[in-house]
Amino acid sequence: MRLQILFISRDTDGRPMTSTRAMTPDRKTKAAAPARDRKDAPWIAVIMGSKSDLKYLQAAVDLLAELRIPHEVRIVSAHRTPDWMFEYASTAESRGIEVIIAAAGGAAHLPGMVAAKTVLPVLGVPVPATLLNGLDSLLSIVQMPKGVPVGTLAIGEPGAANAALLAASIVSASRPELRERLRQWRAQRTAEVLSVTDIARSGPT
Image (cartoon, rainbow, N blue to C red; front, side, top):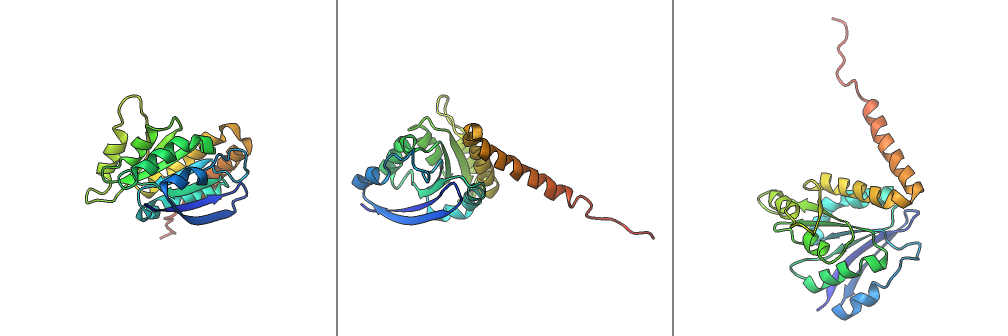
């Protein structure tokens, strides 16, 4: 069996490194060798069950790039590639990953199953993939049993963006330069709002 894996990572200067790898199960471990000491080793993983989910997760990918956080983006399906999912989750920590953002639609098993195989923080993003517009996914992700937590964000793009910001806050705890970039990003959002507070001014009659 061959798996098409979407891989996008960025180094600490924000330079993109992108490839699509065809992996067989016996090659995955070699391709995911420990890389904690490499400058370009990703700190945050963004995973999803299908490439079609990327349109919702792009907001997270863009924010991680803007904050110059090394990250990778991969397709990891809980239902179609369960063995690959378990291997990916169980080896993430040894590869230097510190936070996993996992998005899923429908029954949305990916975040919970990944969390069951790692002690890393897992942030779940519900995807509106069915006629229930993501409510099914939200309930599936948020209702994790005691002992296997998943931090659950909002449905779709807003949740993806907040997942990236939350992941950035987590990994910035030991990285003052990243925390400062995050602080500046928040300050810019404040400035943007304050610059347009008066949107309906009436002139003299």
